[in-house]
Length: 196
Image (tube, rainbow, N blue to C red; front, side):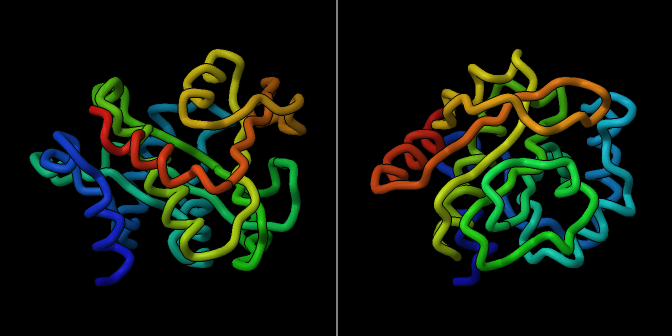
């Protein structure tokens, strides 16, 4: 069984019957770009060129949720690996900073289209992505940045509040959230995937 099949089999419950969770296909880059434009403010959304560069240069950078009914991407999570322990904005635009042997997974986006939120798609994307990345390499941590109003959501996904982020994307102030990989990850990830 290949990794794409494994990722799609890990989702359980009602989500698994309505959505396919798999790695991004090259012809879906424009869908990701449109989702960025819908879900982020000007100055925060990544360009198609940035997304395409990351998708081409970083193997399995994007895990997507595809609606089985509409046959379109409705959510995604993406990231790169590095040995750096704190987030910086350069990770968004420069896929050459990816180090497949890096011990830190820098999460560059968790996006679900507004009309699909509240179903557990984002939670499932995060759980499957962390599990797939941890199985492939020996990671110590996953790091993301978020605005204050998203802290509680990421805490429910097993992330802990870190320090003020060194990020000025879109001229806003962000905080770092960190998930430390450990022995109990399989329980956390399984419980996230099972909830609908």
